[in-house]
Length: 420
Picture 1: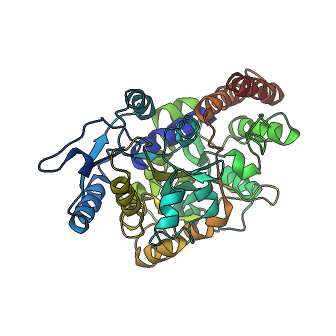
Picture 2: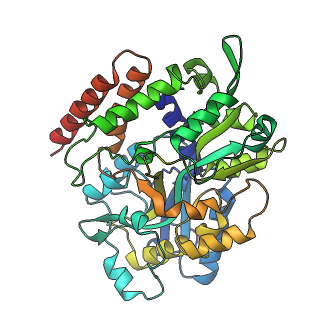
């Protein structure tokens, strides 16, 4: 399975599970003046649609003077459509934001929330994971409030380990332990594998690496450590032979392989938990922290939150909606475990109430100190496309890991230079 295939799978699931959104700039509503209707956009998802309905009803019951016009839209063209609406000054008052935050914040699309926060003692930023809150800041100003976190976890099929008489993965595991176990648990019949030891995304954060320098001005993939990272992906396929090949990866996602019992271990995003917990009923499975690499532990992370349009018609009303949708009583609790609450105390409560698969659900809390988000720069999608393309070339042995590292660095720096 190529790195690009793994990350395309992650991104496609993300588009559905973390509320990838788009919206139309309609306003108005029965009996309400235009300024009393707040438009709010989010992604349509069968698993979570009812949650938004519940939160909307709760808000309108508490705030009868404001009507929310929710705009759930399916599709992967959210950010592109949102750009069109912004250009026509028809954007929704409140917009869901994920990895696209950096691009829109740089363009001055959002209203800074500092003054609202200073005047409203009901919103307490304490308890929010600092790394996640930082994702909604630009030049010291807060332009959005997060309600959920998404990050990578390590899932394992307990039945497969039991059958092999092997101990389950735990927080003490290193990447070498994973490879060693995966070799034993990969079962082949001739040239075809019937069971794979591992699949999923091994990210830069696991290796303690970052795509960009601390000041976000240049790519940092031209280092010996980055070359080793790329080489590890090549070795997973050609040396260790513990991951699905390209043809299998194109037919079945990591989640599908795990769900059907053909996968011993997987690096999966947290939003996969809710789907697996509902569909896996023929074997026991658990989750734990990702393996360490050279003593370092890092979990790739992203976030879901809401931002206010700078040209919202009624900013006070929009603020009331925004803070309700990101409050501890709304999406944080109701969407668990589809998205992980951004407040640690809320997560504690959710974990106490949760029952069923997976075993080791407490690991969701244990992972919080190790979250490492991708840099939220405007060019992040283009930069990651460059990474995927060159990593795949290395995995296919079209280029060496050294050449892939050089190409990634050169192409990413060209993008950053062009946008200055």
